[in-house]
Length: 490
Image 1 (cartoon, rainbow, N blue to C red):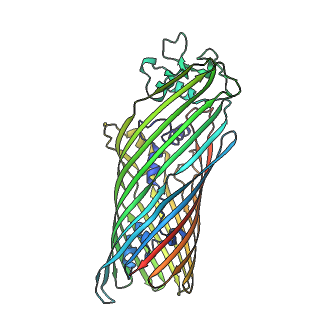
Image 2 (cartoon, rainbow, N blue to C red):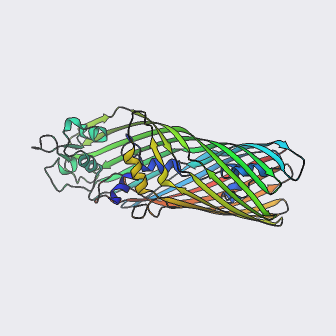
Image 3 (cartoon, one colour):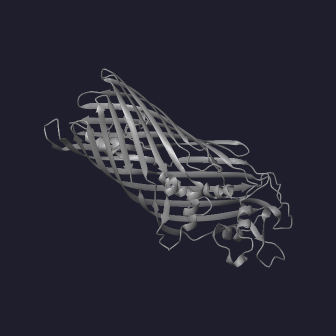
């Protein structure tokens, strides 16, 4: 049962968008903070540091650390490379230029004293929290399976007049058809000569081209204070924006004439999603002694309201010259997704004026993600139970270091984003590693920083569900991220 459930979950809306799934819950719940070049270079380990405009998305208390007003802007370039393995390897890549961060902090109260409430600051920062941009190609020869088998198996026992969705249009273009003598409720495919060859003939080339676009990004509005120069506190209202487009074309071609009368079919699946979510964050940073800082922050669940637009179509070609096309009517969906809460703690050590070391731990219970309030009244009980079964709590770790030489800074960092799938699932070992380096130049009222970050992960991906005949495709994704920050203090 677990293997079957994970096959469904990792399809990533590639089979049907008529109902949301585990992949959607995980995709919009995972956060990979991207901010200023300094923040990125130090692995994002800022929950005990503050003093950086990206840190207020981690720990609002970082707003209270500021002594001056500050503005920063951080453009970013990403080079994303994917490698797949499906009876052969294939690679693809893309570039993405975006705004990683822009923000401003300003003092709204200053007592002039060194005890009691010393100051209050207000800050706004825009930070990327995930980047969905990838180009992926899967290419290889299939010896024992076709997407047509998935469609035919999914509707066995249903009268052909009642078939809907992707199976319905596959039927319309003769990729599948009723088996003679079945009373119209049993189906074969072009690979089995519609049931006349019970063993089926394969050997077709499968090529799937996947193009994903979009991001999640947070507008963080924060207020933070300084009490006695050893306790900093803050609160952040987060407004998170989702923009996502998932598109793929699935082509199966009989290049070597292995299959009787069949030439090719192409299935296209397209989804566009947009939405807005709100969250509240509370945090504190405490200095028990001058050179140590301890940080703690709690993030409420993000409550998203998401709109989806979906369409799919198919075309087929046969050796006798026949060609068919069919499409489903576009569909619109609206629903609510509640992401899990997050708990973050950190410690930072200041080594005089020459070095800074920091470490963060973050806990997220992905089983707490929930779908609700569909516009058509759909009940998400099954999907929410599947989330509880397939996902699990995860831990993220971030480490950072900074070394100072007069006005020049050298930085490094590492991040580990933990395994979100339960043991026994195909992707139980999927996690993300992040390595980063950076340089900085800082003067009294001006600074310029640069950072390079490399992230990587590997996951098992099923193009469709045909267990046990279809094997998973391994997709390895590497992102090379270049960030620069220009900042001013005033």
